Length: 610
Ligand code: AGP
Image (cartoon, rainbow, N blue to C red; front, side, top):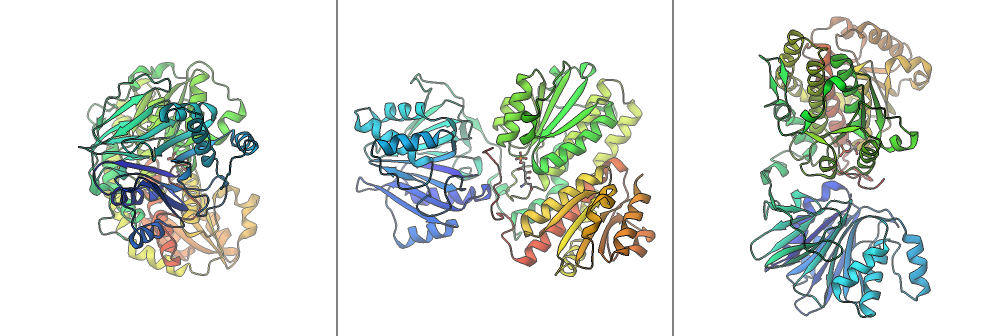
């Protein structure tokens, strides 16, 4: 959600800022802009509503020459997407870009208006620019003016500020919104996330809350808000820049779906020892949790990660016997959760920056729970806040619709189930060995499902004209039904519902007619017979039925209109397979519709506001 970039060096700032912003497009945005300190000594603003190409074209037609600048992609929160509301916002000689939300914006707006400020936009960000400008006009030096202004604002922010009178520096501040500094040679970079700058440098400093970073050509100094210098060790990012490219695929989502066998291997490798029937998470901090003392596990997440967490609940209960509960992060704090001694909270998040999940994690910790993050992005806020972190190792996920992150979350939660079960004595060595052997076979089975892509593309064509989609499944596949529906709706904008199949008769069956497609997830597992009845019920009401079934199932074949087969596998492993055709189906339906698959409308990759 929103992206910040900054550059100070010897190259043309626009040549760095635009490609860097392009790499942040995946976060979701609806307008973009840059402020460049021109060679003429003036700040030049260029902003455009819509896609980055509009800004890029404008800068090609009318370049701004200058070697220091800040840039931004905006996801509208205060005021509609428009050029007027796009960042940066300039007041006097300073320009500001901002991610996050200023909570006391109404009060500040009234106060500034009363003082005669000429406020041009609907944004909360412009108010920060006014506050800084006022301080400067009242005699404060540049840094002091920023500090005084920031002291007035409440909420969540990452800010970058540039001044026409300080051609040798740009300033960045963070509070609960990610910001990193990239260290170059005679040049330095600022960004919301690694992909923006990995092409230029792999040495980064992750700013911490309350950091006040001053970027100059020759180096970067970090202070706290009082002005005392802080030591921050740079980290070397191991990502290969190619990982953030499409590599011949039409969309990132397509590439990421096909990366899943490899991602699954990365999620489990180095963590399981089949012979010893053991699971370990080296360097995770997990060993500080004594599994024998754990009385309850609370799993908390949003969206797709919540679907993975819901599967994790069934895994942990089945493998370790520890009672679990699952919460949507946005709801957790508002139900006054009871957190007795012996509670462990597991938060699941691809980005590690989801505001609701982070807030829920903080609340669970405050109430005394030990915490584990199942997270994909190293050094993210959630990874740094939790007591222990089990990284999913999926590699960068750029498509807004989460695919490989989901599969790796499910795999890591399964391993955590075995980890708890082995340590609290619930799971025997033989049982654990059998489970662990099975997960090592899953990448090959996923490969087999991916191989039927052409057939799935045909089914996507066949579904044309469908008014709505009802995904149904039971037990572990109930969550896969919800995940399949979420994938479809977020990238195709078609109406889709995911339901527990047993709930059909309690309402959703009323939706079924010839224009409704029912996607029944019915592989061979203990709930199979019940799913067969659900398929019959849907057919009897005229619905088109697509069944996801186990290879060679002739019974389902006689009842459904279309089939997608998956290889046989034990019930616990089934969600890792049944989700794959649903991802591909959503992808091909969306692609046929011609939607923006990687950056669907209104969505952001990481939801950093509550
Ligand atoms: C999935 O396709 C979504 N775009 C979304 O539901 C996502 O899973 C959710 O916002 C949680 O994000 P996180 O995993 O980064 O916390």
